[in-house]
Length: 211
Image (cartoon, rainbow, N blue to C red):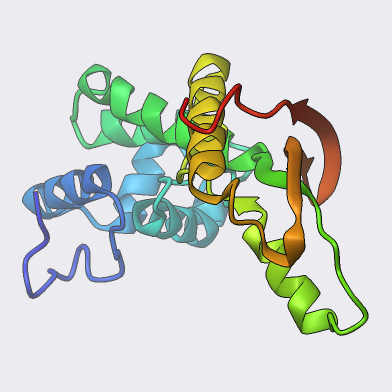
């Protein structure tokens, strides 16, 4: 449910970044509830009205609905805040439990550093004295084997299958035409986590260039 072009006086401070927030804001418009009334009914004390209203604005304008812990207070946890808000607005919470679980999963995935993989050919180049740094840099680029986007999120079996296929393709296309009279000795996969190498796996050459 989308917002109208001209937000009402009840919701003009909210800038929803999530469809569920749009749904909640539409309900606030329907009920014509002011933010002060909402937080009071949720159970916030009078002296905490302004910070509570600010938290409400943040939650309904945050792409994670505040479930990322970006705005907290001593009265409600992130999920308790949403549950209480739904109750005050007479909205059923259970039908949206799956959406909320998905948001929490996205937050969890984003907080875990993702590994970075690099696959390259181990090449013995025969550089002569005329090979400057630019030539060596170009040769190093030649050894790189592209991996698909999202490779790190695949399971181990899928990654192994892709590595095998990419090695075969690279060797078929380049094995007989290595610059600087070089020879491919094998392949190597490096896994890095937060710019530090944590694993290195070496692979033999394919059995033949026709494989």
